[in-house]
Every structure is written in C-alpha cells, then in structure tokens.
Length: 367
Image (cartoon, rainbow, N blue to C red; front, side):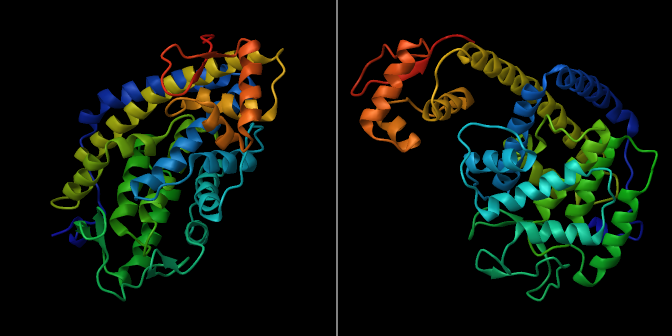
C-alpha cells in the first residue's frame, strides 16, 4: 500500500527531536552565509548569485537526464537578472524555460502558489506538446490515458519503477489540498516545510512530465521564504545530483508504510547541510575571482581575452592551447597566438612547464 492510499493521507508526522541537531547546524550555516552575502559588494553578490543559480538550473535538469549547456544557462540568467558578464552567448528556448521557472519561483517567493502559476511553469518547461517522442498534456493536470503514472528513473530500457502516483481523477483535489497547505501559515520550521512540500508534490506527481523539476522549484521557493531573500546562494539540486541514487531510494522507501516522513526529512536536511557547505566554498572562489579581476583592472584586455579568462577562472577542462583558444573565441590561430602572447607580456598567462606535443598555458598564480 502506498501512503496516498491510506485513510490518514496526507497527515504527515515526524520525530522533531531527531531533527533538531541538524536543524541547528543548518540555521547556523544559513546565518553565516546570509551575513557573508550581505557583506559582499554589488558586483560580487551578483557573481555569487550567477554561479549558484547556474549550478541549480544545470543540475535540476541533469537529475532528470537532460544535459544543458552551462554557458547558455549562465548567459540566460545574466540577461534575465541584468547582470553584466563577459562572453554572453545566445541561449535556446529550452534553457530559457527552466531558467524562467526557477527565477519566477524564487524572485516572487512571497506570492501564493496557484494552479495558474504551476501551469505557467509547466508551459515554460515544455515548448511543444511532446516530451521527447511522447505526447503530453501541457499546462494541465495529467489524464493517465496511457495507464497509471509511475515514477521511474534510469535510461530507456533500464527504467526502475519507484512508486505509483494517485489516480489522475484525484489530482485536482489533491493539488488544491496541497496548495492550501503550502500557502497557509503552519507552525512548522520553514526548512522542514520545504522538504515536506518537495515530497508531497512528488507523491502526487500531477503532470505528465517535469514533476521533479517543478518539485525542486517549489522547494527552492520555500527555502527563499526561509531565507527571506530573493538572492540564491546555494544549490540544492547540485547536491541532490551528487546523491541521486540515495534521492530516488529514500523517495521510494518513504512511499511505502506509514505517514511518518522522519527518514525523508533527515535525508533532505543532510543534503541541505552539504549544499550549504559547498556554497561556502563557492563564495570563496567568487571572492578569489573578483580579486583576480581587480589585478587585471589596469591591464588592456580585449573581449576574446575576457571570455577565455572567465572560462579559466570558472574551471577550464583540460589544457588551454592556442588551437582551443581559436575554437572557443572563434578567431584564427594567428589571432589566438597574438592574444596569448599579449597576456603573457602583461603577466596574466604563463606557459606550462610540462611541454608535450603542443604548448599549453595557465593563469599566473595571483589567487
């Protein structure tokens, strides 16, 4: 028997005492991070927001097996938030759609969650009436025409069924009950409310597709309420992706048995705690990056050089050669070599000592 089939559904319960220790740790980390964010200058804060929002968008899609172009995501977020960033590139409608959902959820966290709002999110995620090759209902509750809604993970042909959602006929009423609860003022810790909202929405699974991404957007919306600020400075989805196997396992386990969701809440809080710790490291990198650009302020840097420097500071994969420079910056090999030599002369780049078949370059150690 699934929990949504029980007569006491959705009367969730949990062991508050078992959760208090990690809740205390989380509150302490949240306080430190909010203080750190507020102490940053405007440009640094924007850089931190851009970095964490990019992680959130890329990873919430990756959890569902959809790989987005990180540069497109970063560019889309920067444009929508009006953040100046070197090397912006065009982004496709699919990228813009998931960015719009996350920004709308967190920027307008004080607004009520409504059917109309959820349908708008769903329409933003799916530009056509298909998910892959399968036809789905867009901006409307699922109808289960092809049979019961099953929550699965894994690639095609290797799917694992984790649980079966409530019948489609129940969805409108189930969602009304959920939204009334989410919009209400219960005496629940706001972080716990985020975890419960995530779990409850996933259990109902009201759409044909996109339920995981929307569940995480709802959780982020509630976490924004917990922080009392629009600016996001940590990525839950990045941490969930790292623990994806455990994520699906605990969701599956929690769908069976009684309405006690203590184990799910413990998993969510531990994941959130790890996300906050990662965010502390991200903020350190943002500050280091800003210091490097401060070092470059008096130097003459063209747009191609800015693009490559940003990629190096964000964590360039592999070795930087003149051929890679030419490909990324969309210029000739000769132009790439001139750009590189210019940065070497300005003490920004140095040749790597390792040598090899082709010369590679790294940033000077100014961090």
